Amino acid sequence: MLELIVYGVVFGSIISLGAIGLTLVFGIIRFANFAHGDLMTAGAYVALFLVTGLLGWLGVPDTNFGPLSFGWRMLIAFPVSMAAVGGLAIAMDRILFSKLRAKKSSAVILAMSSLGAAFIVRMIILILWGADSLFYRPGMLRHAVELPLGIKIRPDQILILAIVVLLVGTLHFFLQKTKMGKAMRATADNMELALVSGINTEKIITLTWLIGGALGAAGGILYGIDVQLHPYMGWNFLIPLFAATILGTIGNVYGALWGGLIIGVAQQVSTAFLLPTYKPAVAFMLMIVILLIKPKGLFGGSSD
Amino acid sequence: MEELARISAYLVSLAIMAGIYSVFCLGLNIQWGYTGLFNIGIAGFFCIGAYTSALITTPKPTGVYARYVHQLFGLDMPFIVGLIGAAIVCGIVAYLIGIPTLRLREDYLAIATLGIAETIRLIFNNEQWLANGPRGLMGLPQPLSWLVDPKHYNYVYLAIVLTVVLIIYLLIERAIRSPWGRVLRAIREDEISAAMSGKDIFKFKMQALVLGSMIMGIGGALYAHYTRAISPSVFTPLYGTFIIWVMLMAGGSGNNKGAILGAFVVWGIWIGTKFMTDMLPYTLKARAPYIRFLFIGILLEIILIYRPQGLLGEEKRVSKLVE
Image (cartoon, rainbow over all chains, first blue to last red; front, side, top):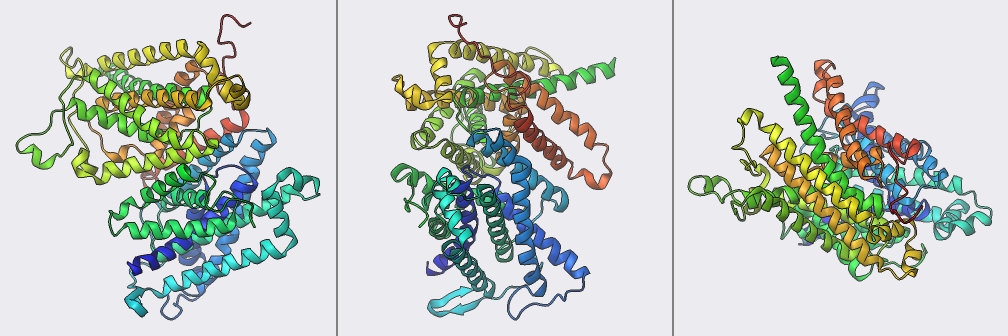
């Protein structure tokens, strides 16, 4: 059971990375972005292209760091993929969502457009890579180390937690200490008020997509390292992402972080009683319960 | 002559599927077109409708079959009972989803319906005892099959599908032109002023959600008896939800003729792209469906940005009393 909770924290931290981006977009641009899961998938596959393709071609050595299942190539691919998917999210906004905003389309139309964008991204991935599961490093035996209390964990998973802590810490610093971060929180709180106080909201929107896309890509890559890559991985993340976002109150970054961890642990612990394939349904049930008893989530109030 | 018969048989099968999709579009039109409810779990109602009718109309397997085919029950009842049963079960499921979501922001319904569709598919996939798990059910009966040679049966089924479409169309047209229909549109346009006129928003939204989902259940049943074999893998978000949304948006939401037109046009495009991808080199052929869906996705985005009212657009005048 303790082991399941630890795995749940690893899985949940990946959900958190996606949910933070989703909640930022939900809070600032004000629509349910159904393409967010597929941005995670895109991040994982861009990194795959770099690790197994481009970087090898450029002569980056293919050796692992100690007990980890990846090395220099992934270290380079990780930030590059984050930037690329941040760019992809901005492009999506420019090509689709900003046009709809300019026409004063309703939030539901924007959500529908994001659903279309999700399918487009996924179809491109399916055309390029096919429908099979892929690995960054196929056929490698991945040994676990034993922690106190008999918990077996792979070195990769410890590193995943470290990366999530690093990314969330950086975001926390950015939101609390920098001018842009404060402007972002202000926009999430009240768009009109931010506008009249001279905040450039278009710039904030671009920044939101960049951060959301980049964190989503990070989540996708980490899932790829931990489990595998699959064209539907992001779509399957969508329900846990929304569950975490609603649990943690829409627009609340810290709420999304905790929401992700709670959902992740609940999903893993449920495998003790239910078939593992029911994991998305567990997240969904939790979300319904929250909607029934506390629809504003557990972290009501503003983003601080 | 033989060539002609082949072409006409092909067109009939195309029209049957477009007719079945018309049923879904009409159901979605009540929810989205008239009431503004964002249901992206159509595949879930599709699935429930198909399975309910299958369980109602097939006999429970006996003897050696019972070892290979598991199903919760098998009533061996007529087709029409299957259709009605499918509608009722879908209505109940819609009601249960409506309770936690219809009082909240509109996007919550979308997220919840998405969740329920995935959950339903997981249940049918994993629970062997319910409806034979991933292998699904086969040998569904077809109504009036004694009438003609099995070779020509599709003509009969097309007539059945078109009759159902016509009945649903007439009923919705009647309902939407009643005071009830005008309340739905008032809610879509401005919820607060509708509430201020003393309308119980929740109640009307619930009625639209349940009615639309019941129609989707009938669509699912029609599909099941056409293909005669169903398995959970059929009811994916792509075939079960996304393409129906594109159809309604293309035809014109808020217009029942548009809903039907959209189903036929988009299904025609979908089949047409198959001919195009058939010309692709062999190595790309396995991925042809993805290229076709990519095209459908782009089509949706173009409609949303450049022609959100669709081909026909909404009929503004829905009462003889108002000019």
